[in-house]
Image (cartoon, rainbow, N blue to C red):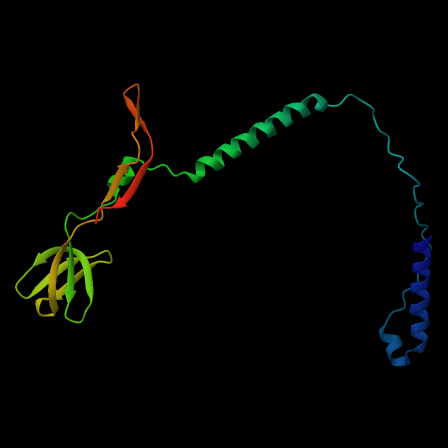
Length: 183
């Protein structure tokens, strides 16, 4: 019904608009008129599709408690994971990869600059120093003083008597400690 009204209205506007145009434009634009009327299909009222009532493919009602228990166990695993994620574990192999030079030197220059590094090569006129950034070549004339720098050392002191427990070749020591610098 609505489509018929729209088509009729469109044809009316087209014909009315053509009447208002000058004659020169009317010859260029062909007039569209329907040769025969095509009836529009009728609208369906309601859902008339047929449905087959059968048993469901699987029993979903018994699966819901299983899924809820899986969700609960996943929540517990996530809480445990978040707790362990906060405490990093450092293996001895990783600590061995960190290279700490045996002897560090603190070199004071005449302009007041202090350079910290390991002396790799020492000549009469210059010194090659390995720093954290890279290699540095210093002239002997610019150097005011060279001191040996000891690497920082932590001193661990037990506050109370520790408890030692031995489990299958491993020792577990529990107690309170105080850490201070070795300087």
